[in-house]
Length: 182
Image 1 (cartoon, helix red, strand yellow):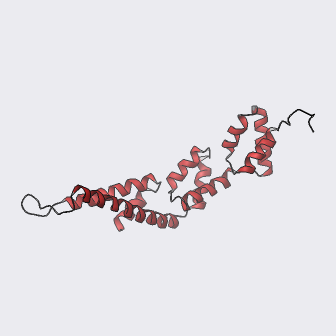
Image 2 (tube, one colour):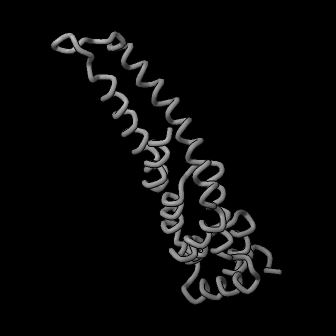
Image 3 (tube, one colour):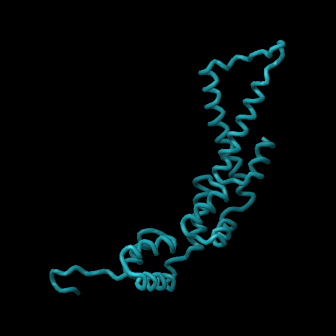
């Protein structure tokens, strides 16, 4: 026990354990947090001890992260991978985690649900914008023929949906396939 009037200084290992007790963290994140308070030698010793105790495991963390982003946020494998790499997860570990967390069939089904939800939102927004502009009426072509406006509108909607699905991290080939089928 420290003498009266002196605060107990925590060691780097105690600090590291407190960090992982509060929430799951990547090794890179732990390194940054510990290094901000302690020297390089103490930081490395604390991380080594955490590895020995099994308290830091980037592969398990990456799999949990990938599953959460896929199931709860509706993100595709490309966006999940980018997020993992930004957080300091090795690319090979990220790929393996995504492979375990996101099956190809699961991704296709999830992408279809996300696409349907986007289509409903974007389609409703476009219909509202057309009504506001007064475009709801069909306009005849120059020679009394049918206007090509609805076709351009459908292509525009398809392009907008494609871009949004790509931004969510779904593979372009999968998105193209889903847009062609539906």
